[in-house]
Length: 140
Image (cartoon, rainbow, N blue to C red):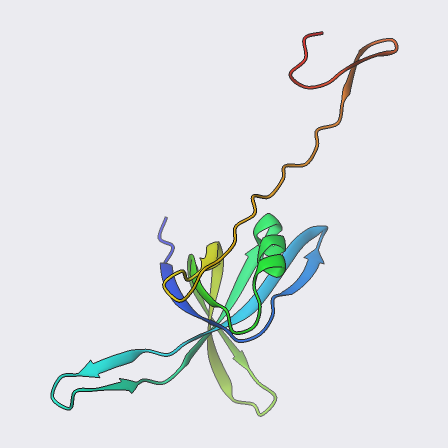
């Protein structure tokens, strides 16, 4: 296993785009990261060039991101880093960075957040015998 994993913090460039692929929820959003450095000699901060990442999220994480995140939110993302190369409309080869996220959350060093635990899906009741319904956790 030689995946490159990354943990990165930045700001959402837009709302989460949510869709389904083969019946599975898939979301993505753009993440902007601008490095800042303090120069001790000049006693001032300087900002580097903004780096943009496309973040892909799947299944429950995709739904939770779409319900919780908005453009401009500060977030922390952890996942697998991948590079993709393509040729754009101007016939120029472009290198992009994408993160297949495993964990996403608000950056609480920048503010507060309200957490609501996702409710698990209700299990279907089962039938133990003719006309007899048994719910999970109930003895038959």
